[in-house]
Amino acid sequence: MNCSHQRTRSHWVTTDYYGEETQGHWEHETVSTTEDIDIHRYRCTQCKQIMYYSGAAREYYETGVDRKGLFQ
Image (cartoon, rainbow, N blue to C red; front, top):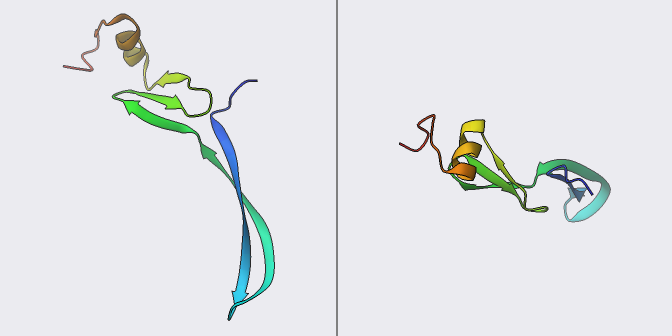
């Protein structure tokens, strides 16, 4: 399974007139499943893949070399 780093959240919405539910419908929205974990990187909460905001950040975290001066 390939993770899209998104999920669909659904909830039932009703029209309420003075405590009486008269109509309702489902509302769906697509939300990101990523969270910031450090400077210049984030992780998917579903598949745990770590992603980077730039190639320079990837190089720093994978090799320890800070060529672009991101962390100075």
